[in-house]
Length: 275
Ligand SMILES: N[C@@H](CCC[C@H](N)C(=O)O)C(=O)O
Image (cartoon, rainbow, N blue to C red):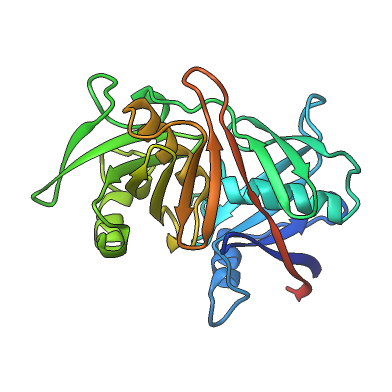
């Protein structure tokens, strides 16, 4: 089977994007993880499958797969690349696009050449909805893992995030602690682990160890979750600029409202794959 795909990225968080509106592609978990291999495959953090709408209220459905082949609920940088992809491929001529994912519906606004603003919906802090094991909802939880104590926030942006404050992202133990907590038992479906350094009320730095991938250049939902946790503690104010290793996202959010994430979406190349 010959598959047409595009390679794209959002601040270095990279994707293979497949049009499954005009093609009929099925990839197994094993095939996806082989293609994600940076030495023996194409290499990507996530694979995005663009599909026809499952319900009349939306323009498209899109599915998100991590590099390990697991299917996940939401992806912020992926949402921006999805928006750019459907316009670039002529699948729509709209500038405001509604798309469903495994968890919820988001709205994408294409702004000029490269910028995309996404209404990511309402963040979820209620433990059972994240899901996160806790007796009651708190802003900060004490978590013991491997004889270490972590003070963390737990936030769902459709997908689960665990965020902790660090003094300096440059020296944060992202790989070691990320690996320990990403499949920690209190997150029954795993979690993306964010390391947040507050610079001032409107600026922070963030590194994210992603579930099913490892550390990425940027994590859109991670930036949203970190901004939410910063704002509910009054450590950050909206709009907040979240600087990731790959670049900066702007997050606008007031408690009780939906959250907007603005940033670039970049097309790298188109390719064909014979499977
Ligand atoms: N890179 C993404 C998040 C992708 C999914 C994540 N690894 C998960 O397992 O939830 C983003 O930009 O949000």
